Image (cartoon, rainbow, N blue to C red; front, side):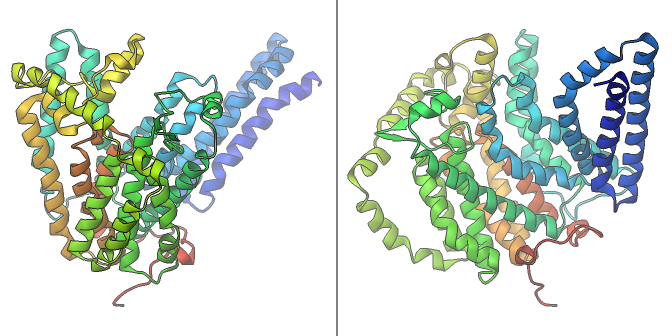
Length: 512
């Protein structure tokens, strides 16, 4: 390759990158302006690099450096247009997160990845929040009424902040910060939605995203049942961290890091998908969900996460009592199916060892609650403690995992914190119920399904630290804000110029 060709490479790369940046904005005046500025800045930088290299006679080194930097340029070619795409309309960032977070666990399989890659989802949320805040300047955005759960939510956040401050004053500021991040960070997703409410079309996309990702991850989870555990370890998974056994079965994890993340995600998808589909059962999307829901249920069964089974059962019962009596019809057949489970599967599914271990742990740590009625501080148990142990190079076995959300809350922020936590979840349910008369169609189904999932989560929290199992926390705050803002006049109609969905995904107008 000649020196001239090497010198032209950065300019060609800059031009290609500028073209990729401009492509998503070809129909947007604001996008064209942003892309033009980016293209001009990129051209100036490339020209300055080439001129500087030419005057020093280092064009050969420049060429070799460009070849080495090619992967980073390709990554930039992907990230820069995506970042500008989100900046032009922050709602896209939340939809992208809703679609991608179920696949976060696949990063385990990427060899030699830099540690900061794990924070991609937090970076996307912060970037989205930044542009949602910029877009709200100069516009009055007031909900018709204050959400009923706001007061207990602020009290819950305040107690966490006080606990983190006390830890910081005691020299344990890292523990406090990690506890805040694990327990409260994804509440920022609700802030994005309040600043940039989702339209009716966006909300419809959320449901479609959940159904599609639920089906895809379910198929992947069932395929894993045919892959030997040794092969999964060769791919990059670890025993007792990702790969777990119940009886003679490997518990499916799909694209998640553990079976618990996978199971509770499927529970959410099944409850919301069922409610929304029953609101419009003739819609092609609903028919497709009814046809594929047995796949989701089978994948959930092979996670062997009984807390998720409990959450699904309670949630379906709530939906049946509240609105969809047809859900009571399969109950006798479901009970008969449980009685006729194959011997090995049935024995594995209902073995009691894990529950006995939980109760022993609760009993051993009961004295801690009596000695510290206001809690031991954030980050002393569960996922946040595991994160601190990982940073310190300790084993996860040294971390206490209460496997009970209520026990975790009272252990960390005390009896007052537990009381506020329960009030918060009750207030969420009551808020959704008050909004239901204002909703119709798929929005009503979304609210009913999500409300049922909260009731199910409260039941599952007796045997799992539900709120710190990602992506439970992300979807909780995101969907709660989506439903609360669904009655807002700013979120009623699609955005002008927003590309239309395929006909199968667009709800038919009612009452027109």
